Image 1 (tube, chains in turn brown, cyan, orange, purple):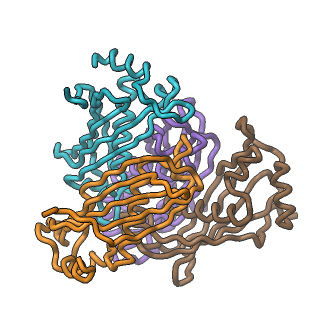
Image 2 (cartoon, one colour):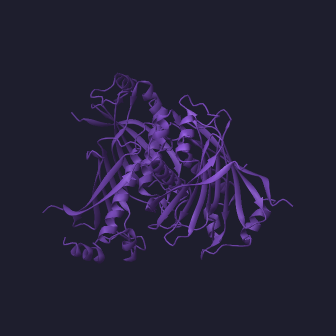
Image 3 (cartoon, rainbow over the protein chains, first blue to last red):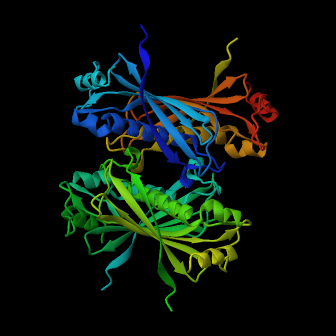
Length: 142
Length: 142
Length: 142
Length: 142
């Protein structure tokens, strides 16, 4: 049985590269893609009712424990890019997302993945999938 | 009677310009000077026992309500700069600091000023100078 | 004769407060408003044909030499805010903008002002208003 | 033959967590670790004569094409952390570094890895290791 499985749950978010996000090479500084990923993840949360604030209402926070990023092409100041974020289903007590950022020519400039865990209000790690998240997954037909 | 008065309470903090702080012109993006000011202010707090966490222990937070910044010269990647922060005494229930940033040639590259107010834990604005701050000022011979 | 004059040239830009823009108090860290100002200024540039790249094509860069910011109310994570940027006409060889940021209840949370100068490609300060900018102002009926 | 090999070339850099690097949970926002990695990498460059500016002098830039980050423990405002960066030797035309960030109790809070490639001034990818870098490696006894 495969542990992690791509789903059809995706959201897209469009950003315009800001001057202050670019470096002396005139391209987006690599660390800023982590912000773009977050933009995408927040758009996903709004679309599917699973934002940071929703999760918080259920008594959890979901810090990122792992992230990775691969850069294929640069993004320049003023370019418009599209972030596609996809929910990856896992049996573990985790939230996993993958990311694909495309430029205006529809070329992939960057891909990535993040993993989040569930902490309760006392800061304790949830070893089991929280029930609110099980229910959310069912509602999503996962 | 002059309301605001320069004091001799100063602290200095040295920073090295990071690659990710510079823009396509190869110079520090102007918004990053606000971070340098904060670096200086925190160094001041540590030197004189009035850090954000100290203030917090007394039941207050001190959000910035006003800031200004004047740029005289650029700072480039790799340059070392010195931030001098000075406490400005005021009768108002405020914390005021001025800033002067100098490059390695001792030229002033940037000056600025910030004003903070006192909010109690309920988020209410303090119209009077909090007693812990009066005591701190006395200890500082102000 | 008044040197600086408010104009009717304005642009608005909507932002959504990102998680990574907020601080331990749960509100937007004050230095991030400088980024919002830039978002507004870039929207203005696109609307009126005077972006950073346009200016660059005429052989100039326009670094910020002065900025100020007054905070009236906090912005929290997830809030939507509207940045209104206004062009201030001046006889000096400068570009001046004022900013007003409003929350969803239409309350002013922040106001500010920035001043830019013109440097040519050699990095020399323009003491006279560059002709391309004179022409732009005429086209704008200023 | 193993392609990538840990070396003894390491540098350490100490940072103090800034207020503006922490999020509403009171801990460093995960994207800021990428900045800490860069702080470490720049310290490495200064120690071993292979900074961004050195590389630039040889006609190359070295954009990051891959980065990853694993978070074990949070860092809070005011904590001091130590970044250890290690050079990983590879036969490929790449620069690889690993990172380990420790808190004051010497606990590992974060590990990571970055990969950089060599682009010449025309922006072309170097498929072979540039000769200046071969020479640097020899000087380092690699």
